[in-house]
Image (cartoon, rainbow, N blue to C red; front, side, top):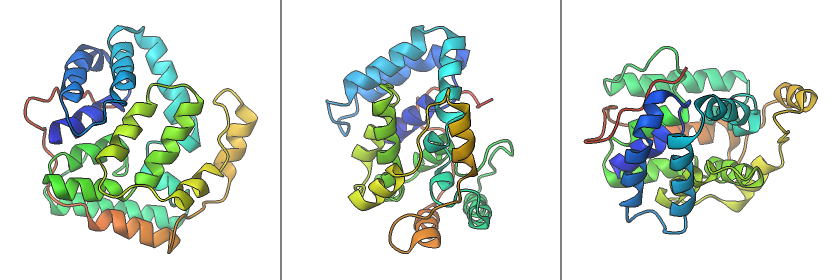
Length: 236
């Protein structure tokens, strides 16, 4: 389980030569995890093959268009909960404090809610706790998976895998609330600007702080590499 979370984390980082070199090994780790449904594997295999064989500049451009330019596909979890509200800043501080209390000093260049960083952290936890914690943002994973499905992106499989590993499955009303937000094409600059200017929206029962607290309360332990897992390269 910990190696699988590390592998999924690696698939979500900005493509580099190091990731290309590790992609085949990452695919082998995922192929041997019996906790992942067989239906997910073909698309995961497609993604690892693309990362291993595709033109690096094309892979990087695709990544930026998907995850950096498009707010609705942001890999920062609190973006989907707090938007740009002040609650988001406090949530970052609280999550960082949880990391530091566990002996983790994260790279200052990356925000604590960056999903690959969060998955690396979960990979250090006992299986039961990791699955329970993974269930907290499951509705976010489901919304991201659906948006990526519409774009016919192999990255969809990473989020389907995270949902499969989560102890709690996404609630339909919370997923629907996220999917009702604007999801512009990355090449539509006017629509993208409008989406980034939208007011922050909170989702689910209790909204705002409830979702944040549920996620942060389950963050425990330290972050260290899983055994035999190729180290993902740092994001840009």
